[in-house]
Image 1 (cartoon, helix red, strand yellow):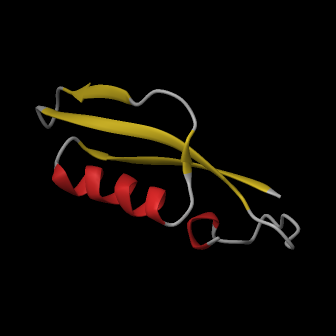
Image 2: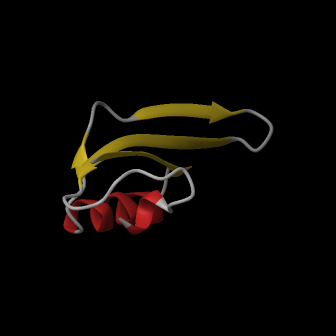
Length: 68
């Protein structure tokens, strides 16, 4: 099965660490990162799509995608 996630968070080192962690667990980048500015909090937010092929499992909507 192929699994998709969209990792989001504030534009800071913790976001980069979350994406790096996913890459080291077998996830692959699935497009460009996106940035958005929240005027209410005066903060930038990032998003990065990632995908992973998981062999031997069938998709179930109740599964936690980040744990695959």
